Image (tube, rainbow, N blue to C red; front, top):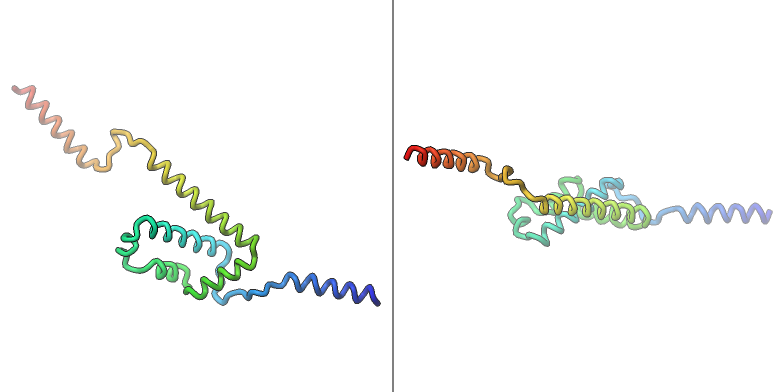
Length: 145
């Protein structure tokens, strides 16, 4: 009898430890959506720190953009943050994925910025054509004289 009571007590304590005390939000975002949301928030924060006037020039606010994109509101986002924070390993993995994506984005932008542009590659090909025509006209006028 004592063994049975011990086994039942042990089983109840093990199953009760696995239960999460934070309820799942009504508007639940899965891990991929939460990762994308945190990525978008990080990008918007970077834009705000880099060029706050750019965000002011947009038609809506960054918050409205996030709310519309994910069909949610600030309360649901906060509830999802709290819910995922109650699962440290999952939340840590989400944050790690966001950090990796941001570093990859930064590295690719730096590679583009540091890449030398060949002389034939121009931002304004129309102006290059005009320069070529001017050069031809100048050489023709020199050969006539």
